[in-house]
Length: 74
Image (cartoon, rainbow, N blue to C red; front, side):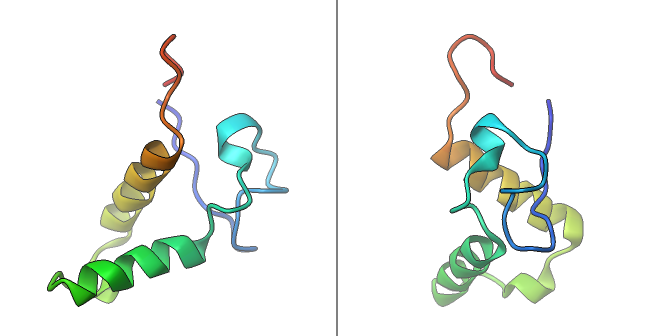
């Protein structure tokens, strides 16, 4: 499995990523907004999570908005 991370510029566009990973809408802001929505529903604030946990959330969001291809895209 390949895990892509968001670059400092805020999105994966321009980071050398192609295909699903090049979506300019997938930004740090998206992760932040989802975190704030979770917090509003009683979950801990993003600051309470480790970097590894935030990576897992980011990956889950990415897989949700860009489902893997049926032919084993993972």
